[in-house]
Image (cartoon, rainbow, N blue to C red; front, side, top):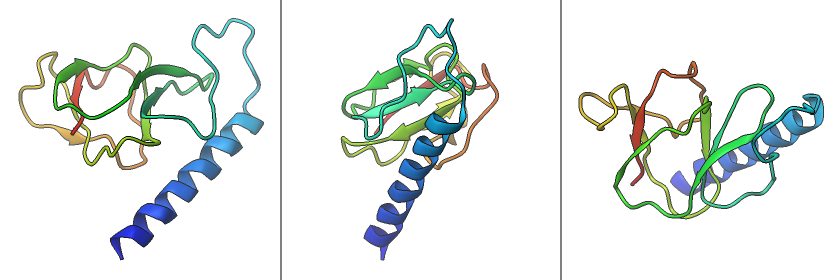
Length: 115
């Protein structure tokens, strides 16, 4: 059952990325790299224009800063199970799961730990 949920979620995420890529106009001033579908690893995206603002290849449990401009994240590959985001720069305090197909206001989270 869990596999079916992961497969369904991955399919929905791919459809969302494809839809966003097709419907959002490209920005001439975009500084990040464009969205790729499929992509590799844990990928952080900005909201508008939709662009890649950060990546992590594999989970390692290390506290890292949230990439500047990131407002959502998607695990394409690499076995990312949970990715809590923290409102502190050192991953202290309560964490909120970022790896569940929702976005957040820019600057809300300052650090994350991918496991």
